Amino acid sequence: MLKPLGDRVILEVQKEEEQTVGGIVIANNAKEKPQTGKIVAVGSGRVLDNGEKVGLSVKVGETVLFDKYAGTEVKYDEKPYLVVHEKDIVAIVD
Image (spheres, rainbow, N blue to C red):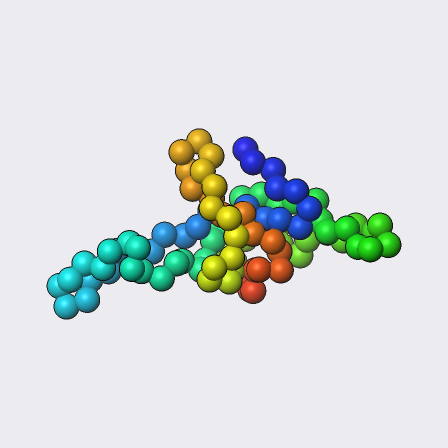
């Protein structure tokens, strides 16, 4: 499995079902990017200017909301993932 560095988090993006509007199928590239994902791995934390390490406030297994255009898309074992900084996560979904 991938292991993120620093304050990065690896997300498994939640795919939304294909929707139709008035019988017309919306192409995948015209849809808005999904903004929820499940955390599959977290980094060790952010290092402050004074050398102190601060842990992350999210953990593996949580579902989160993230900024619309955040992160880098990667593929590992033919599965798509998104690597984001913790600062790009805006909320934890309960």
